[in-house]
Image (cartoon, rainbow, N blue to C red; front, side, top):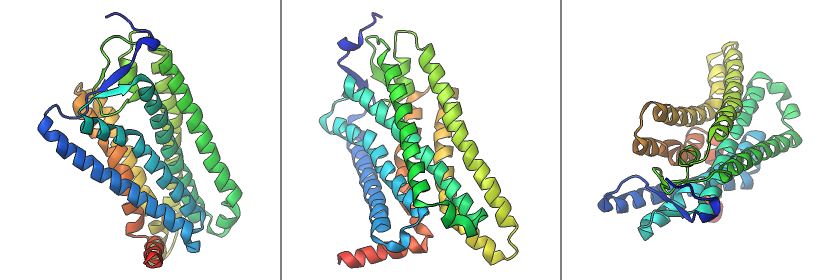
Length: 309
């Protein structure tokens, strides 16, 4: 195929999930419902933590930031897919595709870093409870959030610039519902060795490094909980980190499952369907997981609704 210069590329084609036109209204309704639930649920978490003084603690400060990132993360992919279904178009502009890659990479990395920061917060709260408020000062919490944003922005900028240097052929069909970085790189006609090196090195350093930090934090947490003599004390300590552990497990299991299955199978359609789990379903479930057994958050939401009425 004849290579095309970046300036000649006008658009990519997002193939989505199904070719059958009869399934498109069902897919549209399903994803619109999940998107609205995601935005509403995470927005309620943010409003509750801002409006209730009882939730002005480091844990809920990080949680409100995670909710904000989840709203932005889902908004990077789902609205464009809904527009394409509604207009019966599969096209996404070249600039729009690069922009989508940039924000998707930025926000998924920010999600991972925030989960790591929250694991550290739980480690300090359980392993060093008497020094918790001394260690987790507002200054440190703000610094951790700022560092997470800076690292994510720089990493996303690197990946975006690496894609911009590529030349593409006339086959510009992406077997996904959004511009996924690996699929776009695979479409290039020019040499992609450097892109693949950057992707894998970043996955090892950023993905593996954060996962190691989370696992170490929970190793220390479990060790501290086992040292507690009373069963009630162990239950109370574990309940403070159970929600975060559930969210981490859901996110990592689904994302790792998608990329491991994509390495084994060549069916890109099934891989794109499975990726819905960590791109759409996980951000939607996070508010329910955090509020299900959290009495403080449920009480804050109840007071928020009573104030509105």
